[in-house]
Length: 411
Image (cartoon, rainbow, N blue to C red; front, top):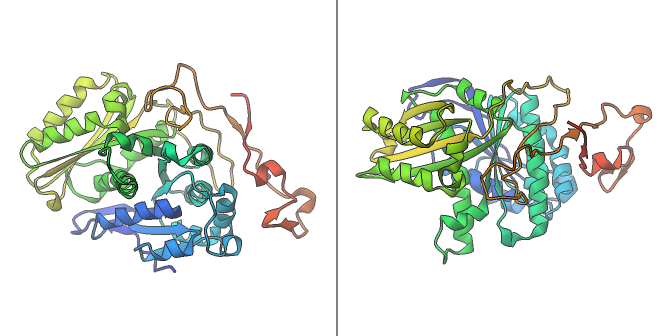
């Protein structure tokens, strides 16, 4: 089921017209749950779409824009946890995905990695969006440790693929939720908390541009951070209510396990901060936040700051931080359509199997191994003949291409 495409370019009150269009795409059942949670946070706003291989789960998603992927591959029963099946399902409906994405300038790909559809389809959605010229931010939840090695390994592979195709990846490890919820929290409540964590990442970033503010952030500020971060960013937020709300929000932000209890801000080369509050938001409160953050941030850190006013946030404050642990001297350049992208040199500290404490940078000099881009540009001798298909796979393509195996290359 699909609805007519309408991307928002104004805020709910029509106060601010934006020259760019935003799309949020939930991929896989977990991503669709998060996307529905995101849509529930605003009465008007960017289009939020859901794409999945599980027809029953997709129909239960309370979103008007839905795309069932790979009916011929999965028959609507889901990818069964198989990453390759999820990828093939997305490829089957790539034309519909392109039609969904084509009008957007900024695309949020929201997914929970570890399952077949999220892990297999989300990187393809990111690649298609980037080929259309959109700025692509992937917000990906990583599995709890109790979900097992198979889901962890699928998440690792998918996260690396997302880093290749998205302008930036915000990875949100579910395991860190254990520090944010009580010990007796139910399993359903824990996953609901994960959905909200992803929702706040998207909501906080969207609010930066969709509302007038005391201090406005530009789309170019986000684009600059994305392109110069090397594709790896950390996200965190803090909220406060009533009297002392600003101090509450700052303390919550600096205690957040998502930012390694403030260590990410202290070590970041650059970070983007937005302060969201009601019409009573005062410049003195903004000054208080900046004083606290400057006290722990590096003196040479680059800072992009905005302060946003929303009438519905009367008596409330939310601080949103997007931090880049590295600042590249030269921005990543988007390739032209059809041109292979260069491999990214990125830290892997936030991968589930990375050594060291979560959120801390890896040992000096440690980077993700480069990948040779050996995707075939044509089919050679098979260019003018029908493909040899077996169980949905094209046997004329090399095995490493069909299986999504990445071959390492020297840097």
